[in-house]
Image 1: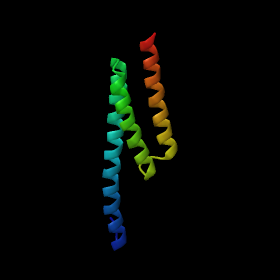
Image 2: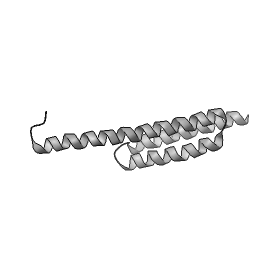
Image 3: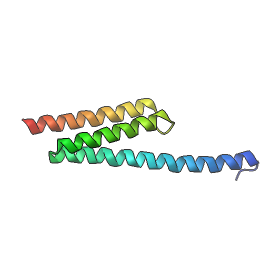
Image 4: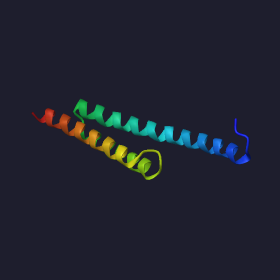
Length: 92
């Protein structure tokens, strides 16, 4: 347990930040899954919509300290390539 007043404040701030970060990461995962599931179902309009939302959330998380910028770039690239691959398979 923290002894100093500043350490106790830090614990509270860290706990708040942790909850916010968890919420943001959860929203990113949710919309990424929705985009991929829509693409797998063949609804590429919905997939594009969810992809835009997900990429926006990822960018906002990377702007702060929730995600590292390289991690954000990797997530966006993997999602885009997966949706593009599904679109290509549906076309052929």
